[in-house]
Amino acid sequence: MVLTELAKQKNKVVGTKQTLHVINNGKAAKIFIAEDIDKHIKTKLIEASRKNNLSVEKVESKLKLGRACGIDVSAACAALLK
Image (cartoon, rainbow, N blue to C red; front, top):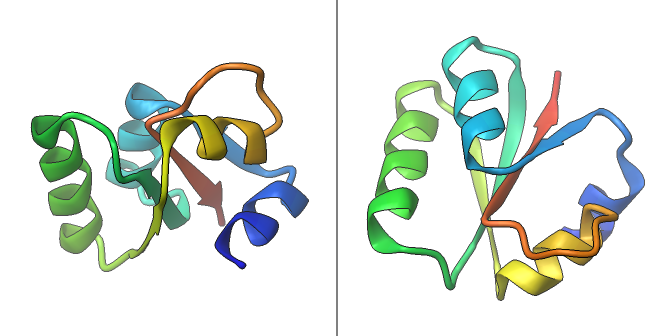
C-alpha cells in the first residue's frame, strides 16, 4: 500500500510549500498527492514533479495523507527525501 511506505519513513516533508521547495531543490525522491486538493495546486505539483523526473503517488484524500504522515490535520501533499 502506498501509505505504508510514507508512514514508515521519517525523512519526509509535508505540505505544499515544503514539498515544492524540496522538488525544486532536487531533494525529493518521491511525491504523494491527495486526490481531493484544488486543481491549480495539483497541477503545480505534478508539473514540478515531471520536470524533475519524480514518481507521483496519488492518495485518496487529504485526511488519509495527513494521518499517514503522522499529523492530526489534512495534508495536500508530502515528499520522501533522498
